[in-house]
Length: 348
Ligand SMILES: C[S@@+](CC[C@H](N)C(=O)[O-])C[C@H]1O[C@@H](n2cnc3c(N)ncnc32)[C@H](O)[C@@H]1O
Image (cartoon, rainbow, N blue to C red):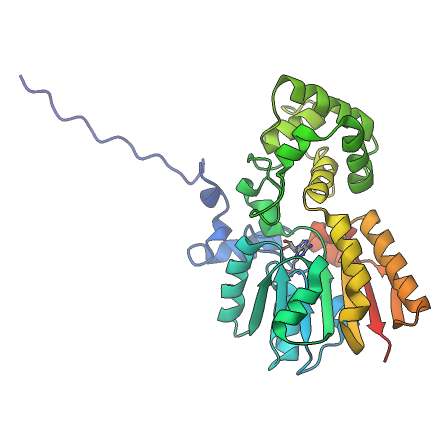
């Protein structure tokens, strides 16, 4: 007797239990799920794969862009600032720089579709002379550095920037060079780890977390974002299985450690210091520069450099206090809460 054919297997309904990152974050595919982006923004979140420019109104007021000015965006990212400033300096192009070549390819296509002319450079703002040389110019009229990491970088689990997604502990903005976070974590001594946590993460329990990392890695390497997040939470007396965010303003217990490690991996303070040394020399007479910081160490360095520039007569005017975003912006985009805007004008 022949067996009756087996009924076809029921198709798994992927809508309620999305298994892949692209399914979970439908807004990553705006053509297919156009309404998702608006819905996510209305909830005060940033749609995955995008980045909301921070303090845009204040940046425009500080830079005062006008048609024909030479604008250098040192941290192109998603191109949110570049898009707004590019429209004002047109027909002059935007000169855009970023360490991250992967996201830059997407930004280039996005800005091209909006009719913004972009001269994109892959590189470090600690080497601005190279960009000026490649462009064949001696200086720029407008410059912006919006420090740190973009929402798109945080959103991609394979980049390892976020404690929210499981992924390899990489954290390099430029994946073509340098040591990954996993390699750095494996090799750094306890004292160095504690210093990074304290200086770059403002972690009040830096010594406790550093000790926990050293003990955990002696048992097995910390290879993924979850490995690290769990070690940090246990060190701080929090059960990772039971942890629940209290509200939108609640900082995840591992956030400070992840920030510190990211800054160490990408040598962010060294890059910023070099950028600040070069700043007066890449600006044309009367040029305006704006810098957005997200961390007390960055604020300190930017303020000191602008103050020194004023005293030396390189700058005629500068914002040294660090302007904070308006509460409405922080409500709409919680990532803006630690942003501070500094700016300076090059003496004529
Ligand atoms: C906060 S995001 C910029 C977002 C952008 N202003 C926008 O509106 O989309 C910071 C960007 O700076 C880049 N970056 C960080 N350090 C850098 C460096 N030393 N040189 C060049 N780019 C850097 C990061 O890769 C990231 O794309």
